[in-house]
Length: 258
Image (cartoon, rainbow, N blue to C red; front, side, top):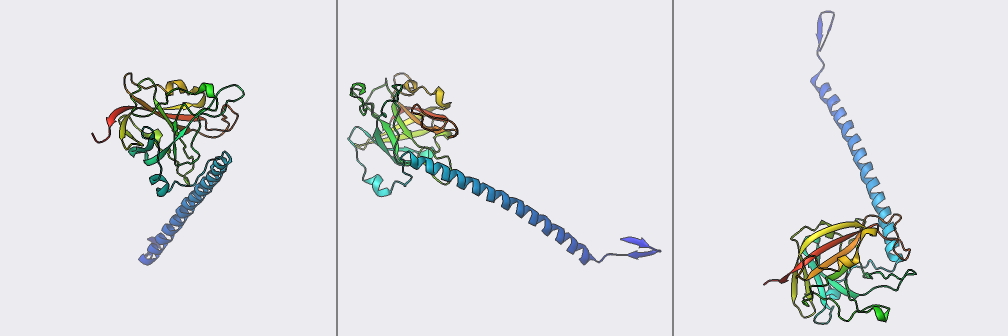
């Protein structure tokens, strides 16, 4: 409202509403443009990361093909060996556990733990599977065998992109008390309880410590997977690898369901 030469000029109510609506629409369009630009950039970055990781995974002979239900159901092992693993709070249900050993020695003589060739499988370390005969152990460590001196060791892949899912993507989020269930070839299900979770730089990982039960007198189980980034880190063979490792330590509680 304004005064001109003693008269009142009142702006029509409809004009105010239209002006307010134009401002609102302009603001909303600006917000849509900002959010849309952010989502587009996020999508492009995620796609680039996915392609980069996919190329790396395939370059080292790992298959990204999902494990089918038929492959899971038909999978068999010896009665005393681990067949499946389930980790409810990490999104793992009846993942196959594949017996693996260590790789050929590097030029420095060290040997690395092998890993599954499918991103949906879990590797179980069998110390009798060694390309060097003299380095093979007499007895492998398997869950439920009563051995409280050596922990059962399992490894699996982690995917760093959101477009792929690997078996150990979520184990870093496990907490003390969370459950890990191993089903053996004889159908027996062993329930473990998480005691500790560590995220370590590659150089700080002590594999001898990882293969020791966390609590004396109780059977132990250790999970290990990659973390960090693939920027600049290499393994003992000079092959690019992740800069960190996640280790989950658990102890045996007993037979699941009892």
